[in-house]
Length: 100
Image (cartoon, rainbow, N blue to C red):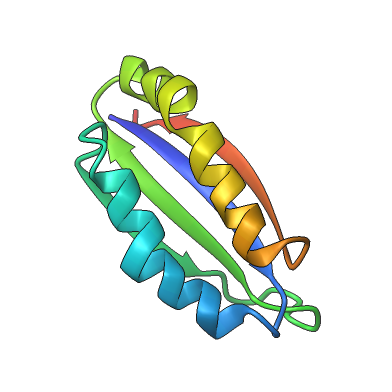
C-alpha cells in the first residue's frame, strides 16, 4: 500500500475555513478521482502552534501508478485551487510512503 501524505501548516486566520474546505470539498474531490481508497486527516500535537496549527492528510492507494496518475492529471489543478482560496496563508509539503 502507498500513502500520499500532505503536511500543511495553516494560519490561525484561515484554520476553521481551511478544515471545513478540506472535509467538504478538497478531500471529496481527491477521493472522487478513484485513485485512492481511503484517507485520514490529523492535527499534529506537540507542535509550535504560535503561527497556526499543522495537519497531516494521508491518502491511501494501492499502487505508485495511481500516485503518478494523480500527479499528472489532478494535482496541478487542485493545488492551484488551494492557492486561489487561501493564498500565502498556508504552507504544505508532500511525501510518499510505502507500507512495509
